[in-house]
Image (tube, rainbow, N blue to C red):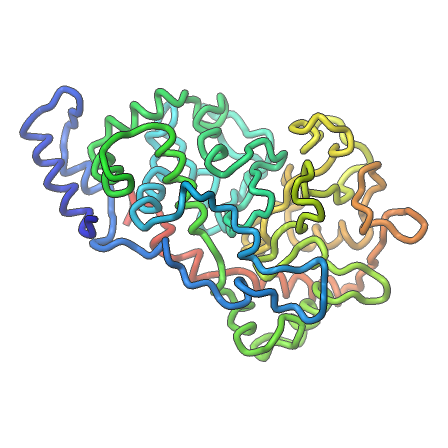
Amino acid sequence: MRTHIPAVIALTLLLVACAKDDDTIIDDPMDSLAALHLPDNYFNYANIALPEYYLVNGFPGASQAQSAAIDHDNTPGNNATTNAGATLGRVLFYDKKLSANGTIACASCHKQANGFADPLVLSDGFAGGKTRRHSMGLTNARFFNSGKFFWDERAATLEDQVLMPFQDPVEMGLTLGLVEQIVRDQPYYPLLFEDAFGDRTINADRISKALAQFVRSIVSFTAKYDEGRTQVNNPVQPFPNFTAQENQGKSLFFLVQAGRINCAGCHTSEAFLGPIPVNPNGRTTSINNGLDAMSTDDLGIAETTNNPNDSGKFKAPSLRNIGVGAPYMHDGRFASLEEVIDHYSTGIQNHPNLAPPLRDGNGNPIRYNFTPDEKAALVAFLNTLTDQPMLSDEKYSDPFQR
């Protein structure tokens, strides 16, 4: 296994320039090398040491709504993350050549500084078109409990999902055959594929696996929340490093108060995932959170399942890095966390498929009626989930830029 990738690529590019192989012609091999910046030794993607509270449920009592993040790891047995595979995935993720006109990469819609979400309401496609939905943040995608992806869960696995944007006529405008050919044409890929998979064969299956490995490596556990969590026995105790307002927000989030279901009932574990599956073999674990009274233009998961009971249900990303992931919801309708809190405070709509926990004892949409202080406290707590070390970590950054 090679550990000095840039030196090997440099030698290969020089040999290519001398050989003038008609199958791989580049104008200036050193320009191609200068455009790609990889470390002399692999970053650690394969053996990331997760904190204990990701591995064991640390919530006190027998809460059915809580579990350990690791219990929802969606890594398949045939695609374990390796350092070489995730390194290849990182290059593929940031490579703008993999679009119809060389202007859009996966990272164009999933920006590291924004928790791998998009600050635009709808993302830009290669020809100036707009995506149908807001681009979801990718932090902690490894722990999405259903293993399904996109807001409507139309991708059965992450390996399926990562290939779909390439083929979307708005997003990247290619076919898988063209994606494979473009990758084969770049002088830096053959050795990366050899290191990741044992030989230089380039195909869509390997592209899919490498991209999925990189995305699964994007895990968050170095935020202010985590600094406090290491100082207490369980997440509901006050954190010594939190302000009084942040601890108030944490209590509102985690604890049932005055008969109101807590936020953690739907944002579970300390990876802050979507609801845990009551029936793992069910159609979906996602819920309708009352954004609209009726679903018309966008039916959400019902578009995948063709089941009207899933109308208005959408997949929920992890709340990790939510503070830098605005705008919010599948259509980006909320510009700020304050607007999100207002929705749950007084704006939940009486959709026919509204999640039962969001109804009161009379069957009406629940009204949390947060006070201004409570709203501010919840926002302050959610901002403690922003993981600045992860958002600036070189191993998740653009390898085509210094």
